[in-house]
Structure formats: structure tokens, C-alpha cells
Amino acid sequence: MFSCSGLFIWEVFMLEKYIEKKLVAEVKKMGGIAAKFVSPGLDGMPDRLVLLPHGKMAFVELKAPGKKPRLLQIRRIKQLQKLGFACYVIDDVKQIGGILGEIQSS
Image (tube, rainbow, N blue to C red; front, side, top):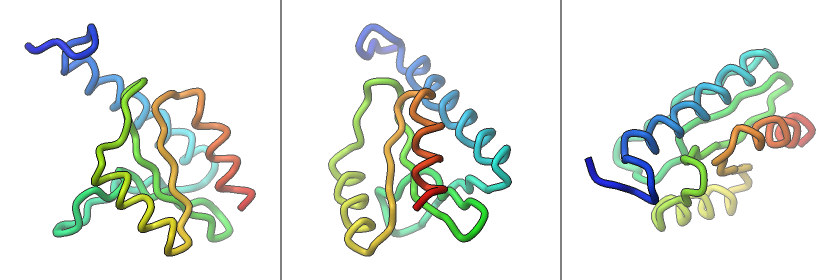
């Protein structure tokens, strides 16, 4: 396997999946849905569409700790924000509570 910042690529992938599972679990606890978002023909869309009670929603891109969105992902997030949608990038499980609080209070 190739090394990536001292971790194997599969380890980085697993860290991102761990964060994603935590997000899904926390959203579910709040009575919401964190739908896996796949948009054929529209690359760079965020990973999850978070839907919370009372019509609250946001797009969430998940990254392994310390990793940043690719240029296409950044462009897509900016496009969504221009349309008025809330978008977040999470690379640490410690961010989840605060971000879900922001979405809920928006």
C-alpha cells in the first residue's frame, strides 16, 4: 500500500468512514436522516444530505482528519452556498455536535 501522511491509504479511508458513521448516528438520535447523496452527472457534490426535524437541512462533506476537499468539491460547495444552502466540511468527530447544532438552529 502507498503511504499517505504517515498512514496507509486504507487507514485514511477508514477514518473518514468512522466520522461518517458517527454523523449518521448523531443525526438519527436527533430524529433526522443523513442520506448518502449521490448525484450522477454532477461531480463534487457533498457526501451527505442532513435532514433534521422542522425542515432543517444542510449538505455535509466528510473528510479524514486533516484532509481538505478537492478543488471540484470546493467549487460545488460554493455553488450550493450561492443558492442559499448550508454546507459543512467535517474532518473530526468533535465537530459533529456543533455543526448539527448550527443546522438545527438555522
